Length: 170
Image 1: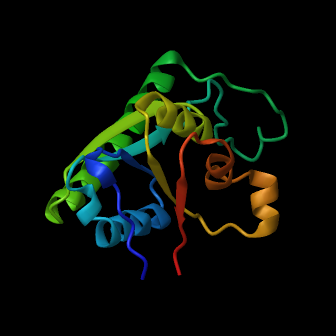
Image 2: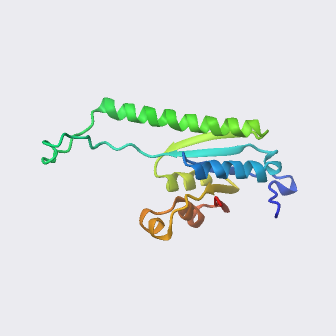
Image 3: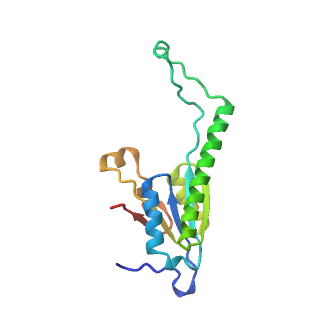
């Protein structure tokens, strides 16, 4: 296997791994720790997670009798705040778990999160932090689903201001 060497010439290189709650992200994390551990000694691995913006309107379940009448129900501000708070807690817990996995393998990691469309906030973070290598897991969408839903990894390959490594789960 080819060896990836970061930090050649004594220069510190920043590596960012963008994750979500999927098994593909977990695989990408373990792949990075197995294959790039030696290259990550000079600088910490930056683990990034995008938080999707919360909606202001939610669909609530209705009984069969009232289901015939469609009446959009706006969520209360309290409900919206609760959703945001729980989403933030989940994101921070996933980032902390990833950081613990890195620490158990002897890799120093920093975590970062931002709210927004994942493909946009990932590319923005790459530029803002002067990242030298972006690593993503591939979700394994088929060609049709990727064309309809879009692909974060494909967007980042085309738009990130650094090389992008997409880790595909076998």
